[in-house]
Image (cartoon, rainbow, N blue to C red; front, side):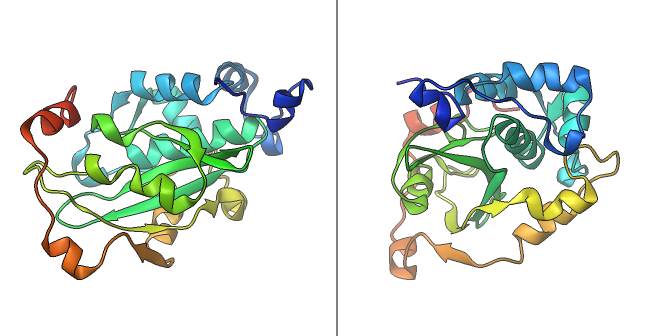
Length: 220
């Protein structure tokens, strides 16, 4: 079932589109208003060029992503969080930690008590999730079989609880012209939870050839 981002819409109410803090320009708001469902937002992220600057050399604000039309997973997640906020949700990010691989960041939201996610990724299976997951762990584990490195090894190890980006409003994370490194730096400091025991990790197998080929579809 396609669901609007604002929970009131499910009850037939008119969705209120607002400009958080009055920070976005009229032109920026026109773009964000069009991203009125998670599916539209995910398609927008998928259409952005993947930022391949070495070592994640940038951490663009949503304003800069809208202007530059490029993003890696952190930048895409912040843009998604800002768009979700415009449509009435909290701006929530969730961090996934990996070993022998890059970490990944999701913008998460809830509809009728269930969690879903939107994300920018170079790997096919690490993007959108329909809001059907009852807990954060359920949502996280839906990424497990798809989270791999270039050796086809399963690399997901830990996850955080959602972080509300309202805590960074003082540095204008949505519209800053300078890189907003404070956000990813904070995500590395908070508590993370294991997805498996050490014994289970030792028993991990690699992705089979077909699943790995699917994961790499369109990889930059």
